Length: 474
Image (cartoon, rainbow, N blue to C red):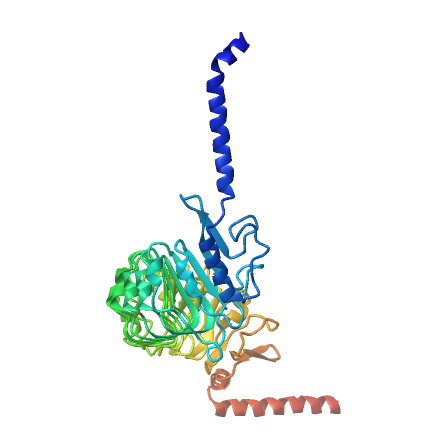
């Protein structure tokens, strides 16, 4: 019966088996599909242009996308069954990455990799004098529908301007031009990269103003243009970057006031505009920035005082650096209401008055810097507080500030003199407590005036001498 069933259904069974085998064979062939010769020639030429002519890829089988892929080069298989290069990543990123040689050039052949999604070149162009390399000004439009990430990092020999043609990269999500030798102004065309989520231009020699149309990068999460020569006033359109998490424009030459519109950035967690030329007074500068976790405004001629700020509104702040910004007045107790504060730097200002012990109540505080001010009086913090902070408590260079220490063996805060200690003088059953600066009061308690105290002292000495003589004679 079974034999008859198989004999009747054999054509169908054979067809099914044939289809399965065909599918498996096709899948196996596709998994080992080769790269087109043209694609292979292009990637080999790119690699040789970066690492040297010595490289020929002879150890790769059957190509850089095969069983023995090269680190830093990744491929994807497309609908035509062939593999195409999608990632080119050179430099000391991975342990077995290929490093660029000292004569490396920017390979023009890169623009023939039509499926390239990620391009990263790190520490490839090192000498701006012996081997200066410029970014190509054209051909970037060939990546307009593929490139998602462009990283050029630690290339001091990469000089020239940022090509405006980069603005044609419609799919670009990450643009990192970090620590290169780039000059010129920020291209307006970058404002066209509406899918951009990360814009890092740190550590170049860029100049000019921040373009107003950068405020249209609605998906931007990180904007870092620190350590350049940017100048002028920040555009108020930066307040339109609703998604922004980090804004770092430190170490530039920015002027004027921070735009109040930055207070609209409720997702912003870090704002660093230190080492610049901002003015306008502290209250106007930070009044709207209550959602921040990290605020760094140090080394700006901002001026103003701490008393006009409602510190109780800064409930998210964890690090606050207001050092060397020309602050005057006293340190308000309301600063102790920032319950998440971990780092507070008020150093090198013109602050005066006493420092309230209420700051000790901040549960997360691990660093407090008030050195280089005109603070006076006694530091009343507990020994436990000094031990907790250690050298992270800085109060030196306050000439009229002193510290109370409960026990002599406890360490003093560095650079702070001890307050005058009480001294006890015993005279029979009488105890007299005197401290530096209140001798007259002590004397008055004994005789009402220095004159009466002198008489009291003479009579006392005479009395003692008389007793001694009497004992000697009798």
